Image (cartoon, rainbow, N blue to C red; front, side, top):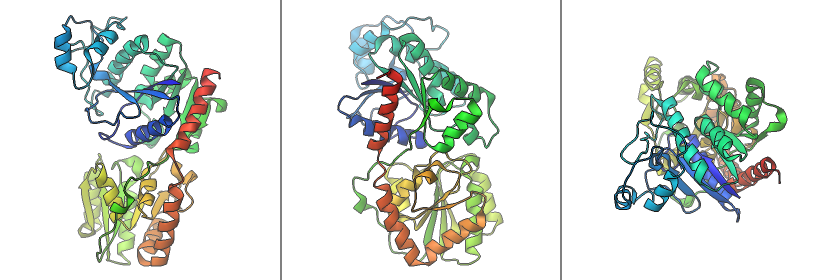
Length: 418
């Protein structure tokens, strides 16, 4: 089975949960002996793990014919793509993309992020995938999230191969219901043209059915999982007086950061031996700093910014409690990562991971008093901490990407008609 996977980010260069999920799922699927995955991202950096899949950078695929010698192409692309592959892909240019600005190789420059001209980059990515769809050999197209849906639909039209889309979130989640009509139209067109739709939770599945008008038979839930830790013994808590309670994620309205600050204020009215960490970045960060100051708890709050790689696991391991108060969370991998290192988690009932986790405390995102009670109980009662730590770790160690990959494979087989 050869899958052409379309994504927007891939570790170690990630900006959110999409890259983490893409990596875990592809690793899990690669354990199937006949699975071959080609993963297309806008801009690879050269240090991605390609031991179990092939990564193609959209920024290295020509979409406009330019006459260059083999030696010149080799010198320009030798670290990311062979000259032979470049020329083979160049033969896949079937449309006039002269309107798109390209470099000396006829390739498009991508930011590798989520820039202000994101819609333009999505359109350019679609052009690149049209070239790949003409030249690559694959059985199925798998589009991760809305940014790659237009490219997936175009690849399906070109190749005649079935398209499955993977909904990691919808704009209803990201915007608290203030939906961007442009994004909604892209999402809806992708869903309408897909042969099958996978969602990361039943919560998201209901949104796809109810808000996007998709038939129930067409939508399957494949819950996310967590990548096993290679060296769990390295992540330990250092002895200290104060307990640490952590929020880790984008500091945006979807993630409910204000509820975390308000719950912290409640806890600190009962005990002062707790410190609160809000790790991440986002458009609400300044407002959260101001809110902590307004509540007179700024001396108990820390804002370390965006964490990467081992910094994430180390922060979670150093924490005595992890909290995810998301208003609408399609899944939420971070609580699983926290539980992996023995850190008890508090999650909102409005999160997809709440569907599969038993040994995490669940509250409504708006219920600040319940959140505060849960935090206080974990940091003040060692027996409660110990129980959640041990049972939680055992639970998440049985939630694997391999099992998620088997579910995806069933969707593939169904879409192909096997």
